[in-house]
Length: 174
Ligand SMILES: O=C(O)CCC(=O)C(=O)O
Ligand SMILES: [Fe+2]
Image 1 (cartoon, rainbow, N blue to C red):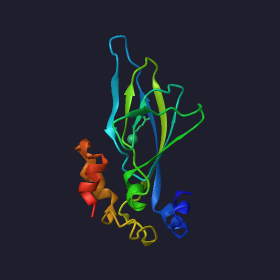
Image 2: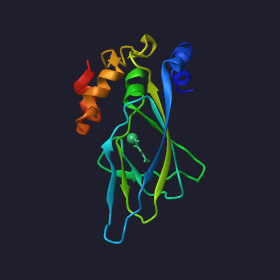
Image 3: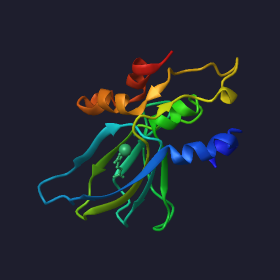
Image 4: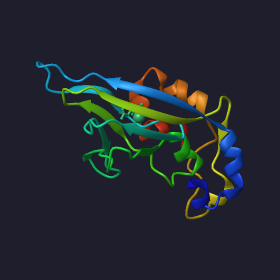
């Protein structure tokens, strides 16, 4: 759907076979009486193509940073059965910056355990990601060098501070 909305229909098939799904189930332990707040996951952007999350009835936890600005928003799906979809760095590079990979983190504030089911669409090993010519023009010059997900993953693996947009740009911006 995303590819089609950018006029990239002819690449849909290729990209469906260039990615694989990973399913993760997360459990964040609720707080005990002595703790007021706990960082569940540090601030980061996701590195793969796309993240789809479904959280249980504990709505507090995931917070997303505004695209421009310092403000953090609680990600509150509108109802129990809704999903949250987040763009990752790989899709941002593939679509030449037209979609934004949001900074996010998880902060646990309540006593209830938090369960989250996550589906991560991840580039296959060895895939080189390059924005198609169709979305590169004078108004939207090419932003990134061809992007090897495995290499980028290694670049961000140990130093988790590198999981943000400035570090992605330092890594492969033109
Ligand atoms: O637990 C969540 O809501 C988000 C998890 C997350 O950000 C991740 O696994 O990358
Ligand atoms: Fe994440």
